[in-house]
Amino acid sequence: MCGIVGYIGSKPANHVIINGLKKLEYRGYDSVGVALVNEDKTEIEIFKDKGRILDLEIQIDKNIKSHFAIGHTRWATHGEPNKVNSHPHMSNSGRVVVVHNGVIENYNQIKKEKLKGYNFVSETDTEVVANLIELYSKIMPMDEAILAATAHLKGSYALLVLDKMDLNKLYFIKNKAPLLIGQKDDEIIIASDIVALVGYTDKYMYLEDMTFGIVMDDKIILKDFYGKELSSKMVQLQISCEEIEKGNYEHFMLKEINEQPTVIRKLIYNYTDNEKYEIDKNLIKEIKKADKLYIVACGSSLYAGYIAKYYFEKILNISIELCIASEAAYLLPKLSKKPFFIFISQSGETADCIKVLKNIKDKKIKTLAITNNIDSTMIRLSDYNLNLYAGKEIAVASTKAYLAQVTLMYILASSIAKTDIKCVKKKLNIVAMAIEDVLGNREYIRDISRKMIDSETVFYIGRGLDYYVSLEAALKLKEISYIHAEGYASGELKHGSIALVNEDVPVVAIITNKETELITRSNLIETTSRKAIGITIVLEEFANEEDDMVLSNVDGDLSPLVTSVVCQLLAYYVSLYKGNDIDKPKNLAKSVTVE
Ligand code: M6R
Image (cartoon, rainbow, N blue to C red; front, side, top):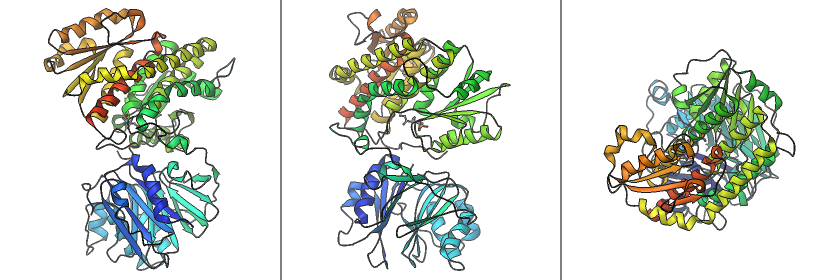
């Protein structure tokens, strides 16, 4: 949530910052701003506004020559998205200029107790930080002033700070919000996500919490919050430009949907070899020792958790409790004698999950983080980790990461159970081919999606695994098409919500289980008898002529990997017809780093 980027180097800084912000836009996109330091290093010019980067780009004065700048793309937390609340924010005298990612929880208290007499133009928590730093800078050097101000901050922050009285230095400070720094020769770039570094540096380091730093020319000084110098080690950047570009696709979401067969094959490649599973033996021992597993996640990752619960219970016969992270953060379920916690998160930065993870870590309970970001906070905090290998997911709506989560949980459960590896690989390869069939039929799915575009409500129904996919399908449709949708256990609809069904309501039935096929079909008929628009997604083995979308047969347990792709495409095409901004849906951000 919110993206920040800073640059010092030989290139025109506004280009680097604008380029970086475009790549970070998935983190928040309701307003944007940059601060350019002029070539003489005497002035700071700020350009900011509500809206997208492309709109701001044309407002930036091209005559300003700058090799040092900072920028910000915002997902509003404090104060509505407007020009005044956009970052960068300036202190009262104009000396301190900051951009911020995170939330300062006690900003009101600081305002009242420390900053009496200061004038605030915005509603943001960030302006408080700028003024607090200014307050201390009146009596001590800037580096000490920043640390003194930081001592009062409660919450999460990655901050870049400019001091108008010494524009040779870029200060930064990081706690509980991601920040990375990259360097190539005399160029230094600092940003919320590695994507902003691609094309500028080939080495980078992830900054730990409670790091304070100064960039000066080509030098980076790192300290902890007590002023002790920290050593730094850059690692090779392993992400290519193609990975973060749309290529020939109209949207990242469509590109990412299309990458899913490859994601499955990459997971097979990374977690198995010919004869054996390639998963940390100690992790497996630890899970086997547990008497109960707890899965913690949010959003799509939580829905992947539902399917993971099914796999673990079925394949390993161990009980699993699924926890909504934001609930478990304040009300932890009753713990078993030998619990083990699994955190599932695409970003590895989700604040709700991190809160629970820290709590569990304090209780000395062992943890596993499954993420798509090897530099993430959750990977650092957990005892064990597994990489999703999905490649950078840029569209806000999760597709390939969700699919990778489900696939990886299946491989993990199978490896613990020592299920015949050849059989597991074969089943997954069949799934990858079945997804390719779906992708090949996408124009057909586009036609089906027309039945949904004018609706105000859509139901997805199914039983067992099909119900779990329904939950994810409804979330996908809601977030990018803005149509109200619900995923329902098909037998549950008649217990109340069927009252909402009428001739304008599509009901999408997902049917992949022989045992429940007929009863789910009956539940669908209950709705079409009330004039609902029935749509069926069915495995070939029990399909009939009237079914809308017939899928190649796959192992029943793995059907979510195929049915979910159909639902992703349905959501995508509905949104395309509606002309929505598919990759950046309103009110959302990719990485939810606030509670
Ligand atoms: O990064 P995470 O997987 O922890 O994120 C969790 C949710 O915020 C995320 O899945 C969200 O629901 C997606 N936008 C769904 O498409």
